[in-house]
Amino acid sequence: MCATAERAHPDHPGFAPGTIYHQFHEQRYQWAALQCLSGYTLDAPCGCGWGTDMLPKPVIGMDVCPGAVEYGKQKFDANCIVGNMLETPFADGVFMNVVCLEGIEHLRRIDAGKFLKEARRITAKGGRLIVTIPLEKGHPVNNPHHLEAYDLLSARTLMDRDWAATKLTEVRQVNGIPILWGVYDRKD
Image 1 (cartoon, rainbow, N blue to C red):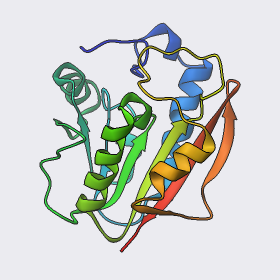
Image 2 (tube, helix red, strand yellow):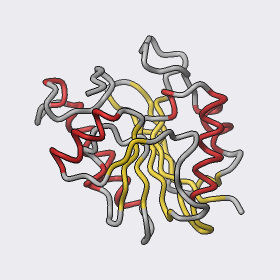
Image 3 (spheres, rainbow, N blue to C red):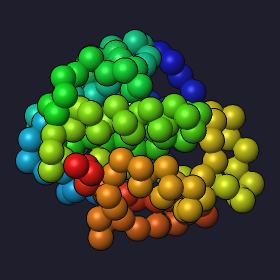
Image 4 (cartoon, rainbow, N blue to C red):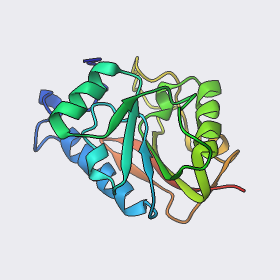
C-alpha cells in the first residue's frame, strides 16, 4: 500500500489512538464534516479512506495510490476510487463539497493551481472547497513529501484565484506548525 510517513494510516504506530497525529486526523475530518453542505462530497486525496467515512454521505474518496484505495475499501468499506486530482473522472458541477485535507502541499504550485481549477469545475454553483494547508514556509520542517511550502500570503493568493474565503477560514497551530483551515465558496 503506498506507505509513507505522510499517509495517515490507522495501523501505523504514529497514528495509534491517543497520539497527537491520531487526534489531529480525527479533529480535521470532524471539522470538515461540519463545514460540508448538503449534497455529494469528494475527499481528495483520501489516502486509505480512514477519514472519508467520517464525512457526510453521499461521499466518494479519490487517491492516486491503488493500494491505499483497496485498503480503504476492505478496512472501512469506504467508497473510494483511484484517480488523479488534476484530471478527475467526474462531470461538471457534480459535487457540493470538495474536501482536500493536507493535500495541496504535495503538489507543485502549478499543479496545485490546476487542482483548484479542476475542483471548481466539478463543484456545483454554490458549492464549497474545504482545505487544510500547512503554513511551513519559514519553519524548519524539511518534509520530503511536501513539494511546496506555503505561508499565509502565498496560500491565500493560490486559493483566491478560483475560490472566495468565508468567515470560517482561520489559522490554527498544530504541533507547532500553523495550518490554514479553509472554507471557500466557489466563485461564479
